[in-house]
Amino acid sequence: MKKIHIYLLFLVSFMIGITSCGDNTDFSNLHTLTAAEQAELDRQDSIKKANQGKIDADLTLYYTFEMTTSTSAYEAGKIAIDMDKIAEKFGISTENLLKGIAGESGAPEVKGFAIQGSTGADYGSASTTNGKWGHWFNVSADAILYGDGSQTYVYAEFSTETGMFTLGQHPGRLKDGDTIRIVEGLKYNEIRVAVAITIKAKAPGQVTATIVNTQKLSIAMSPRSAYDTDPVQFDVTRTLSDLGISSLDDAKMIAVNADGSYAQESNAGNKGYWYDMDGFAGQWGDESSVYTSLDSDDDGNYYIGIGQYPDHCKLGDKFVIKYGFLANNKIEMLEITVNIVGYQDPETPPTGDPEDVEKDIEMTKAWDDDYLNVQVDVKDILRNAFKMTTYQIYSAILSGDLKIYLNEVSEDAPSYTADEPGYWIKADGTVGAWGESIIWCSLGHSETKLYLYGGNHHENAVAGDVLKTKFIVVCNGAKATFNLTYTLTEAAE
Image (cartoon, helix red, strand yellow):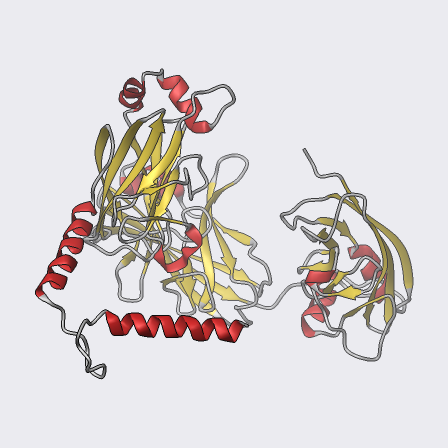
């Protein structure tokens, strides 16, 4: 039957194609538009063009915002909206207007929407951002979902607490000179109000400041498998004096690009930058080496935190990175040499021969749909079983010499289904894939920590589930068996 329907549809389409060309019986040639047909197409095109940029509203408020293009930052700035004028048009108080936008109980029913830039039509959803009112827009100023990927360019997100729109961009999409006019709308009863915001994109300005001083600093670090930072002290007093400022909050942080120009958009830590394998400003990813972060201790004393991209740096690596403070057209540059050295193990292994151990482990957590986890420290258990230091066990995990099995040890190499080394586990306590399991459990590790951690599947698991299994860790000729009981309780309020 399906094939017959398809054939009939094809036949109808074919017949329509024949009759649409009138008396023209030469079906092998393209149909030439008549003057009347061309005129109709031109009329429809003129209507479409007339609707572009059309704002159907009883009141329109116009704003302009200069947005500096960015390859890493989403938020660009805020703009205050005259909510008093909108409230006056609606005939309600500003307080009730804001409550209505927020959707508070008993407040006036104020509906948010957007007006499409390409057609002038309404986009009915109040928000495609995280706020109650606000949208992502494409290059044609049409409101779209963020998930539309490469189509997202700019966004506006309203705050009912401040009466302001936060404006921003998808990093790397806007170009210098781009102009996009977006239109956000509110409707109360039959009254429509529009907020038209013209976003003008501009490239970051060139830094022409003079380097007034360079502080040469250094740090020795071992290769890391985590993003933890180590501190590098610098002369804060000298920095403030050289730049003529009273607080580091008055300075902008910059880094040096490979061409000698300055990166001005922080993309790591607190006001910090990622650096590539050559020590120049870069991005987080496969080419990353280390990053900087402007941090402070409990007493408010500033230092530079240096962290690594996990498992990218190796013994013998050396990076010379430049991280500067910019203020009053002056630069105080920190030139930091990062040396990657061998790990200095602070522990000594427990004495004696490796021995099998068995422990009962209970893990309890509230069900959630965010894949949060709970942790149980097992460092001392594993150290005593394998007679190894934490770092030695951590190294065995990375090399694959440490293996984990579920329920029984096999001669085959383990096939992990969750964060390695670990498993997604089905309700019967056996190994499963993500789609058929209720919880996962893995062995968390770093140079100084060893812990079991796990969470629940957001759909398969429910509050009240109790799972029992054996988590068997094998290393250095011994095994540590954890009789694991995993209990899910009601979701947290």
